[in-house]
Image 1 (tube, helix red, strand yellow):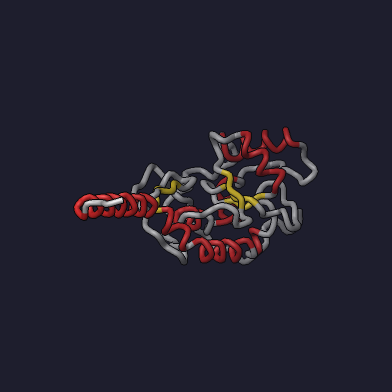
Image 2 (cartoon, one colour):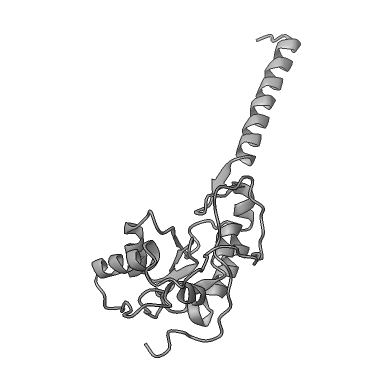
Length: 206
């Protein structure tokens, strides 16, 4: 089959143009964090291992080794995160938080999910900070033997209505930067929790 050189050139140019467009489209795919910030997905993916490393270190901290809500210990005690509060919780309590999706942003820590820089920063406060901010006036605590409904009710009181919150406390304004910092492309109304350090196990004595 005879093909005119000009026709062949036009065809090749068109194919290259489509390929370039697809490549640009893939490169510009956006990813939205649980806190509402948008990033280039490729950038988030490139920092995934570093961010998971930071989260593993945070999980090893004394205050974060127990569930922030029921105080349980073990491998699943801090397998989940409540990103918008910076709390590490167990599987059972994470299930209760999912019932109140209007209050809590639940995310797994196994490495299956991508984590944005804002989310990693939000977790830097950890359970010590959540305890200090939301449990100052709490009379009775949740136990690891609590039922699912008891956990749901506790989530509502602690995080939803914040009945035991310390007066005049704001859960925002973090100044801590994650190790793998990627600037968001666009920012929604997201305010990561403030950071805190913890050297003592504040669950001791439960």
